[in-house]
Amino acid sequence: MDMRSEWMDRIHRYLQGEMDAAEEAEFIRLCEADAQLRRWMEEERQFIHALKAGFHRQWIKESFASQSQARLRSHPGSSFIRTGKEWLAHIAVAATVALLVSLVAFWSFNQWYIRPNKMGYVDLRRAIDNIQRSQYALMNDMHHNGRPPINPGTYGGSGFLISDNGYLVTNYHVIRNADSIYVQDNKGNAYKARMVFQDPATDLAVLKIIDSNFCMNGALPYTLSASEAPLGEQVFTLGYPKDEIVYGEGYISSETGYRDDSTAYQLSIPVNPGNSGGPLFDSKGRIIGIISGKQGESDRIAFAIKATYLKAILDSLPNDFNKRAILRTHVTKNTSHPDLHNNRVALLKQLKDYVMMVKVYN
Amino acid sequence: MSSLSVSKSAKDTALLNRLLCHDREALQQIYDTCFPMIRALVKKNNGLEEDAEDIFQETLIILLERAQSPNFNLTCRLKTYIYAVSRHLWLKRLASAQRQLPLADGLAEWIPVADDIAQHEEYDQAFRDMELALSELGEPCRSLLEHYYVLNKSMAEIAEIFGYTSSDNAKTQKYKCLMRLKKIFFSLQGRTSNPFTKP
Image (cartoon, rainbow over all chains, first blue to last red; front, side, top):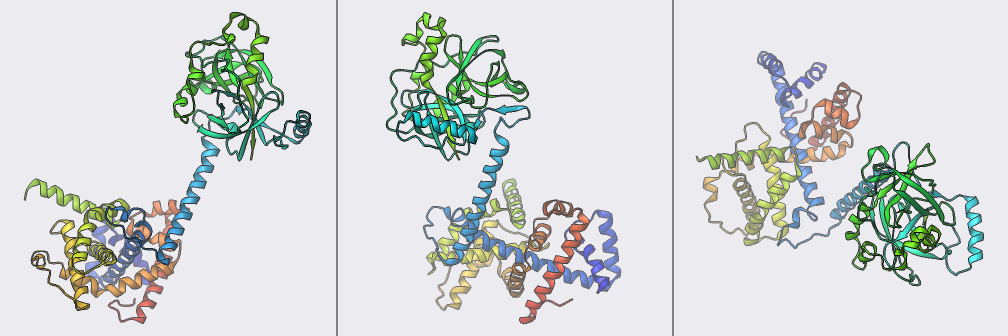
């Protein structure tokens, strides 16, 4: 018996065709000389044959049991569907596996795919801690305007309106994993919003305010810039690194972003967690980008996604989104008045109503 | 024989080889091309949709078992072979239910599949026992043996897939699994009359 087990590996390798020519010739020679070995080999051959046939039986049956309803039976004309219990077990297993796979895929996607997850790149969504919560609660009391949630949210970012019916843009990383999303204007009015579009690759997301009492008076005071902004362009941003809107001013320091990312600008501008998703304006008050992150060790080096990439996703938005409002070339409102551009304070007074805080609960 | 039919038979052989290592796409392809005619055959001759499916599954099991032996030779199109086996099986079933209707298409004369089916049925009980033994074997043994004997993976690949530190370790594990399978299989065989000899 021990003799046999020593031979077994060689017999099986021979039968599986794993031996090279020299080894095989040597083995055949041994077989010819040894009747006992030939008998063993015949028995192993039969056993492997049965082993494979057993696997074939299992495979065919499993394929028909678990796959036939979804795929094999999809042939036109076969409308007969079995609903026996033995099928349910297979379907349940298949569904569980599918669920697990998608959960794992979703998790790893969130872990690794999103682009701010790079060394030295810090995305600017704000984690709201307990102290901030208490300050915030006070503020809510002062405003007293009805239903906004008492809880200030888990994360915060910024966003800006891109239509007159409540569509607004922010960063994907701000709202990822969100259970519910509220946006709040600089007067403290909070509105419930829903995500209508996300693109983790460009790190952009579009929200829609779904509160019925949201109403915007008048057209947007800004448009998307049609061209890329040049190096050295004077820029400014509005955002919510704290509970009040904050203005920041700087310039475009490079036409590419983090690690030469051509979809982004590098800026010299003070930004902090909470600025993510805020608009980046050029000196004429047009939107040229979306603030998305900063370089970890530096306070002034920030990055913004170029507005061209925002423009590219506008076509993917639902039908009631009117993209003319944000793309129109001539600003008809009084914001186009040259005096206003020279007077930053007056301009900001216009713009700040359209930049909102995004609050994420999860 | 025209070059067209040579390439067709080469395609059939390739398809069969993919089926032998449990390629799902190949199975789907065979299902799509062959099942409709089996269904038509069975339904036209006193059968139901379920009968057609049973017959088709049985046919595929016989096809795989026969085709894995080195002296199997496909003398006609794969589709024809499958049809002939299914037809034979269905006729037999009709006969056993005593409601046989003659299928006068002369197919039996020019595609002799009766031998193949008889050879399969001689060991049918052994294959069923093996199927049971495999499901009693448990994981990872079952998958390990499947990867080696059906999916034709090398020991090095298996070591990587199953997380063994070396192909020698995988080999030891495979040997243990095989021994356990033999034990289960031959104890099942003991309950029935069998054509297999116990080592």
